[in-house]
Image (cartoon, rainbow, N blue to C red; front, side, top):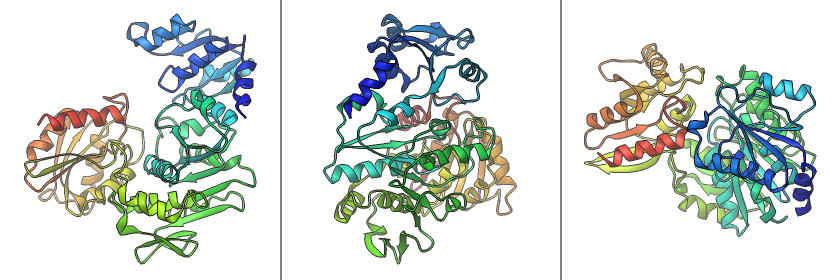
Length: 453
């Protein structure tokens, strides 16, 4: 199986390769292509004076750079690697494809050459936690696991170390899936709600992209779906489609506080260390995905010890009786709603950020029910305020709303307003791109601010 990797990259030798986007996932790809003697041009909109040392090192290794505002002008290629953030309908990609270029991506090639079983997760919410849970369960069962995709380390350069008996556990975004023509052996869609409509032309395109995670499965593939989500409940794969449900009957469901699979008890929900009903759903999804691979005793062991993923309702500090939580991964209203519902008390909420052109109406009632003070910053601050103020339950006497303009003033104002016993939750309901490179950088900055208080 290892020769599949060698065969693929040897087939690219002496071909013109264009790599669009020189971010984290594509840099190891460029190194691989250069290693196999390919003629590589790296295209990125970052101007030359702002390129970091790693990209300049790629140039020294032989990668030709097309950078700045005209980074797509005059590019010619036999093979084009698309970065996930660039829509396949981009005119430059379409023009190259029309001239005969084969359009692919780092993730699609990984699926083609990976020698081991692939378990993949997508959805609007819960992807990272569920993907990590599947990985932790498999590792606890003694399996060799490679975790990556939309989280963790780029996997393609690691294929040469993988063995057929290993497992690759992969989180996939809609951007990665948009033009994928391959599906994993086991696929999971946690749920679907409006998201990333700043990139996708409409909700239908977003949903169709997500379907690619199972569209190309063969008859041996397993598909796991959320029966409680109206969109995913309507999907069907092959005969091995299994549903999980917190609210009704399904292959994996909740009965009297116990997660059951196929009618047999597997896990007491109260044994799950990480808080929130959304994490009960994440466990149900993971339990369905690892059926036949991991024993129930291992699942129970993981539930009692797994402390959650960084930036997802992460306790940062307790200062003067105030608990500060980092939920930076909450880049949509539904994720913030799940975070708010994790706490029994009303919280002080810090929200707002980059506008992905998605509706915020659903967030209004949840903020009215779960928040006592709201501090807003970023482009979506006005949308969030409107969602709250237009809510029939809104009472300005019991819910103070403060517009702070940007992220740091909102954090400082929320901290200053907190009293002993309060919970301060940074859960933006928005992407980070207005002020930060990604949600991880935003979360790290929040933790730095809180630790400096």
